[in-house]
Image 1 (tube, rainbow, N blue to C red):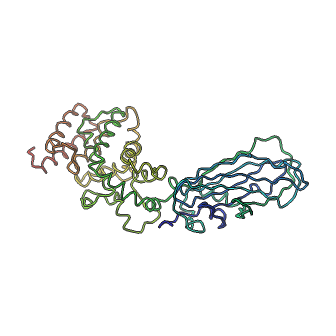
Image 2 (image 1 turned 90 degrees about the vertical axis):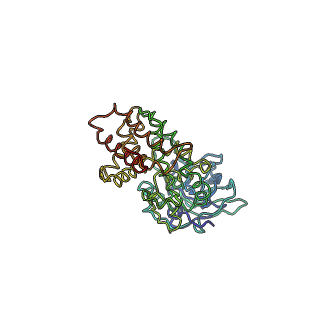
Image 3 (image 1 turned 30 degrees about the horizontal axis):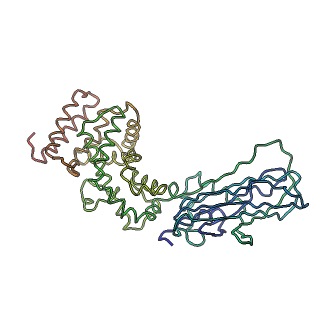
Length: 443
């Protein structure tokens, strides 16, 4: 059993009862109940993977062979087995439509079986304790998901194993007289996922589940020196696509800022940098008990949930970060950059709500063909990149050349100077001059 315990979704639905077979918790219901003659109904199988590995679940329905008058074929459904590839820890339900013929004998005690073949696809560990896992806090779920669980909770579930050579659950149902209905579309069935690690798990559970690969394989790959060039290349491509090609040094300054933010997930000794942010420090979370609602940087939560969906991402986290999480990284970086500018210059450029709105608008503009311009590129990314330019150094970079280059690049942008972006130009010049003075250059 792992050190963490996944929530017992199935037990919340059934009120507790379940049966565990081959590492999967199960319960069977008939919906609607009672069954009405001449009407379709569903066999509903709840399945909860109690392991951290994928499981292949094959289900075959065994319908009543005869009705109360010994008539055959009164219940009709698919004859072929239904295959369900359960993801690690996933919870969901299978609905298989069944037709009850109009002349089916009214009666009680009909029995329907669900024969089960359960095959783990690799060696796996239990992540739900006996009894189905830790108690579920329904308040932790989105309203829509909680409403779905509560609707299923209204059904009566059976956890009776039918005697035989293989695993089979059995549910008992009654048939009552159906009211004649106009022709209706065939009842639909299928597999419906209720909970999976990638979409529904708390941040605390994700951190606990992936602590070992994070510490051993992810953190060593996201050091600032290692992510700098991939982020520079992505920055150049994204701004070019948004209609504002950057000068090489501008792209490098933005990449330096982004690399510093990524690095702060596991900063090591850099955690004492006065420009750092403990809010971005993920590694330190492992030293304390984690509340279920622990807040993570946007980009890091996105990475964790992507890994839960596809663990191959563990082998190439930086490529995934650049390809899929660049916008999420900006959501973390832009407010941090504004705070840094406030610390250095004393300028208050907006309230938290205004900065949040600016960030949202920035990401939107970056995804439009002609959305980007000088003011948005410089405020706050390039300006803040000029503040942290010495926190990470590119291969073959000479800081004195980069310092002089900042003034030269800004001079190249003079033709874009307008009344609207005047403050951005002036503040950038002041930040560049500050860096020059810090390193002993005469201005």
